[in-house]
Each structure stands twice: as C-alpha cells, then as structure tokens.
Length: 397
Image (cartoon, rainbow, N blue to C red; front, side, top):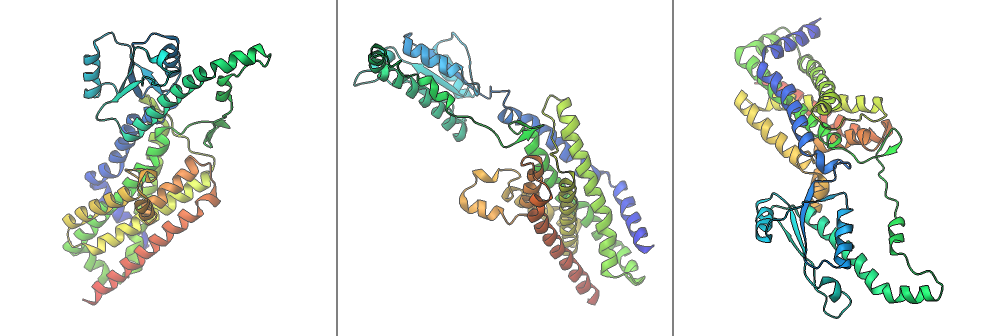
C-alpha cells in the first residue's frame, strides 16, 4: 500500500511538470524525425544522388566518351549538366552547391597509350567530407583503370581474335563480385536506412535524460520537507528507491513505445523510411527493460549526489552528452580512432545502442543481446546500490 502511494505520488508530480514531459517525449521525437530525414540520402540505396559533380569533356574522343559513360552508370554519383563557363562551375563547387568538378583535357585519349599520359583533373569543394572525397576518387580511379586496361589490351585482343581465341572481355570482371548485405527485410538483402540507426541512438539519449525530472523532484522533496516526513513515517531507503524506480521505468518504457511508433509511422509520413523492428520481440522487450532500469538507477544516483535542481540539470546534461559522444550516439564508433573505440566500450549508452542494433539490424535474438543486457543490468545495480548507500549516509547526519 505504501509503495502504491509513492508510485501514485510520482506520477502526479510528473504529470504536472510539462517541461519534463516535453523533454522526455517531444525532444526525442523531434530528434528522430529530423535526423532520420536529414541523413536519409546517405543511407538509402535507392536515392543514389547524395554526391554530385560537373563533368567537362574537352577531349571528345572514344576513351573520354567511355569514361563519361562509366561515371554516369554509377548510381552513387549524380552528374549535373551545365553549359556555364568553367570558372562559374568551379565557383559553385567552392560554394558547396556541387561537390566535385571533373575535367577531361584535350588529347586525353591519344596520350593514354603513350609514355606521357595526360591526367584527368578533379577538384573537390572545401566542405567535402574526407570519406566522400576518398569514395569519389576511388570510383574515378577505377573507371580510369578500366579504360586504360582496355586500351593497353587492344593489340592483344586483335591478335587473339585472329588466332580464334575470342579475345578478352574486361566487362566480365564486373560479374566476378556478388555484393550482399547481411541486413535482410522479409528475406531480401537490403541496406539499412537512416531511421534504423537514428531511432535507437536518440531514444537512448532521451531515456538517460530522465535523470533531470527525477532528480529535480527528489531535490524539491528534500527542500520542502516531504522527504523528512516520509522518513519519519518509517519508510526505508528500499521503499523510497522503489517508489521512484517503478514509475520512472514505466515512463521510460512508454518512451520506447512512442519513439518506435515515430520511426514506424511518423517518419514515413514525412517521406522517410519506415523503421523495421526485427524478428525478436522478446529481445527488443528485454533491451527496453534493462535500458530503462539502467537509466532510472543512474538518475537515482544523480538525485542523491546533487543538492539543487540547477546542479541536477547541469550534471545530467554534461554526463549525458559525454556518454552519448563516447558511446557512438553522436559520432559512430567505427570512425573513431582506436583509443576512442576502446573507451566507447565503457559507455552505458554504447551497450544499449549495440543491443538495439543487434535486434534491428543484425537480426539477433535473446542470445545476441544477453551481453549488453547483462552489462546494463550490472550498471543499474551498481548505481542503485550507490544511491541506497548515499541515503543511509544522509540519514546518519
């Protein structure tokens, strides 16, 4: 009965705090929607137009025509047609309107078989990301290598044809690779969409922000004497912690349901891809439960470490940003240097993110998420024990 009254009290306090409700539900929904739509073209295989370039063919020969054809056949790059002067096109690239400009100089084809080939010139805008730069350079080098081999092999092709050998077909090389993704939807190989990455990331970020409303109410109860009256009624640290833990875990689970609904229904309504929840509902439920437990336990620890609401807000904001930055929420861990990748393994948000990705992307089940679930449970228990210890220490003062 006492526990029910404590839970009811917490829910009433939270329902009166519209700022906390906006922080817990509106903020992550907006983040998921905006980030999913903003990064959609970077993930979606059917878009294929995230990198654009100008192409100036000043050679007009068969080799340059072959290069133009091969570049235009690459779906990941989009050629922008323009008849403006080259200086104007370069200026647009400099301003970031187009990422690259490629110029095939006159004499390119004839010089290819000689001792002094004339190189193709490529210029990138100053704001092109290094990964995109390297990707475009690799594609351009591959196309040039294919054309060069075709020109170099031409004499041997003729000899083999005269000898009845049939010649060499360099296009056969394109058939020697069968590229597939281990991410499957309805049994079909697919590339993950932006929403598959952003929903679990920003959901975790928002769940740990529950420390702000929880610690704020705890501080207010201490300042207003509510906490002292509850202790005078014989309520121990276990009852006080459970009275906070249970309702806020319920709030976090409601967060999970609503944010998943945003990914499944709201993002597609705005033109984005739909979130695919995987094929392991029990694993998804387990991850939602352990992340909720870990985040609320962490919030209880914060609530007993701070003395004012301002301290709670600042401490929670800083620590959440650090855990998110280190844990791969804001910056994917695979682009971090080796040292930071090692450090990221110690962030609770990294454990939660990997667990959700095991379900959403890697088609994992309960067995796959057990390591992350165990780590989050251990983190929550440590935070809860530390919070209980702080309560007992406060009682002795």
